Image (tube, rainbow over the protein chains, first blue to last red):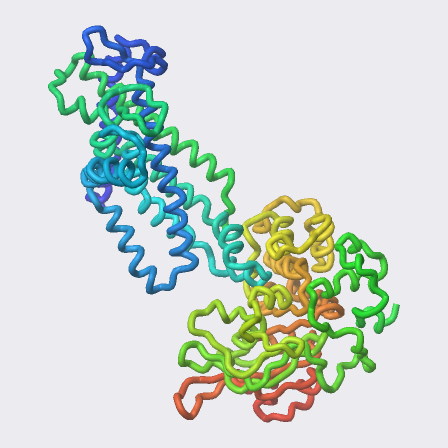
Length: 284
Length: 323
């Protein structure tokens, strides 16, 4: 009992610790850089001799990769979930679900390399004839999407499977076909679980580091097209954290400012989605 | 008003084609109301009606005028034969009760009558089940269409997690019924299911806020809204208290004027109270496999079944000696 309580307390302590560790250097940062300049500036050059701390370039990088990832993961993930939950025979499901979970277990650095070595040069440039540089938010976003498909598909499938059989029967007994039953009864009944799966996928896409660090590029710039390269918030942190930043310097504190922003964004996404789900769910 | 006019729906004469439009549902006389709720707009091959007259009404005719017929029907789940050699006809605008001990296959038989069994992997039917003479399991028959004409109410109320209004509107919407005013359809279905007065002020509220009995009447209303000809009920009152049960029974007696109703019930008194005809099933271990297979013991007019059954097993069951 005491041990279990300790384990529970530990996770809370660690969370609080992370927030504090994030907050303190970030506050130091904002003592030197105006918050508004930070949030609205369009030039990110923290290590230049005349530095600029406008974080918008990093935000656009994250927005592009995340949006592209969702564009891939939501339709494919939900399609797979609906197929598995409503149409697949038990035998097919037995093969498919573990396969999805294997996809979830691939280390993200492998995905990153896959984006860099195959998706960008072969799939996008050679086969689809899209002109790209070595780095692009397109390649990074697509692979990011592939990475979060299992998250969306697996959790959505659980949510769909949890909808009582009686609701399906009720709909079918009225003469509705299976597709209508799925889309108009089962799907709305499972919407809170489905939304949760998408939000979790979204949070993972926002927070994912290796893929974007490898494939999106490391030049922080305002991204306004999918074929451009750019740096994301996580990409910047990864790149800079490996360097020789001295603790206490402005360059070092920059990391924490971006980290705090990332943390806030993820938190906001979670809160907004909880609100939305409460508003639209059909509880059974 | 006499019984003949309410009980007989003339499909061939005296109907304005435009009458099938749902806007006529606010008809004043019950005869016209019946017409608005007739099954003609399903495009049924040849519905019963024009030639049907129950000369002995309110007495039940000796032989049912068949809407659905089972001819030597066996039902299997995989290799397991759940029901064997059922031959019986379900009468037009009658209430037929299927009774018998647990495991006698009565629910299985009921589910086969609108192909709900199709949804159970491995379930199959041999012999012939026909609807107005057409093989319901024929290769060209669409199970979806069968279920639209033969609706089903389940043991546990299963309203959708939507508003009361949306629960009723769902069926007409997804089956592509042409509806000029959905509000009218909802009102009429709820009225016919004796629920309108209780819910008319909270149509937009969740159906889950209703009591069990109200939910079950909502499910009946939802079924009525797609204008079926037959309503199957699988122990519709088993999850309800006695008062709610009585309301459903009253409702069934009323609906029977326009619908053929087939009900599975564990409650013999219920069968005696509401059913025109009663079928008694029992289960017996088969010689070849030892599986308990359901079979039809006796099928007759309810009053005879309960007063003077011909089979000893029926008598034993009804008098409470087993099951």
